[in-house]
Image 1: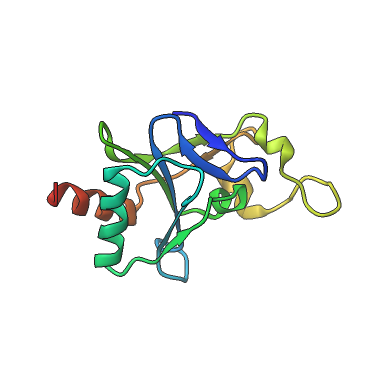
Image 2 (image 1 turned 180 degrees about the horizontal axis):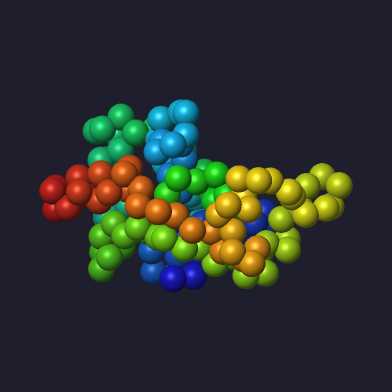
Length: 143
């Protein structure tokens, strides 16, 4: 799936899916929250089910487009659609986007945590995310 970005290099949605980043949780100190765009996207019935499940189970949702920094810090990523329901994403290939990410001085960011997730500077990998699996189960239970 290809994820569409806006002029600010924020991640909006897939060509056929909605896109979500799981922030926190797992081995991180803060509880999980979900980041997903709320403008410039198509609203789907499965997306509505995901947001409803998050509300019902007290998982905070940040309705804003995820950024490349959010991807770097994420404990999980998933997509949703009527044909895929809720599907975990285990690899995000950034391609040329990585060369666009820079700090205020225009130099490429150096971050030990980022390096652990990168392969050749162009991909981020995510293991099984408990929050994603919970949301997947909750959505399927209410369909």
